[in-house]
Length: 95
Image (cartoon, rainbow, N blue to C red; front, side, top):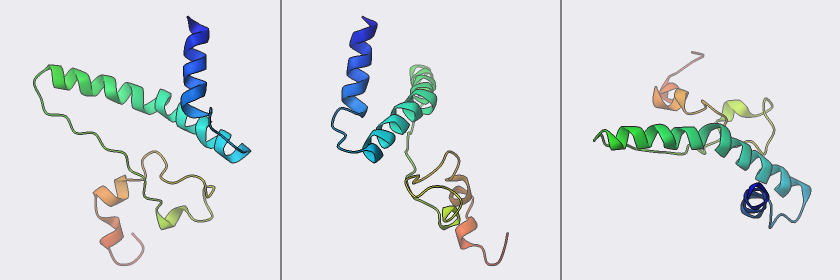
């Protein structure tokens, strides 16, 4: 049974990779889904089951502040949306 799961995960995230960068991206996707998405979905289901509305989003905008700090293949790192949620891109000067 566990080998079937491994085969499914491989097929979903890496199966169509044609080069090392695509393998890397697939592995990062699998790790990100395991570390962040699966637990977030679980919590969202608890809220839904309690009768609440639930909204889910995926932030993918690469902030200009990431240039030279994180590798180019990283689009939006964990927590990158916080500055946008609170309006930092609209503030003048160094905040």
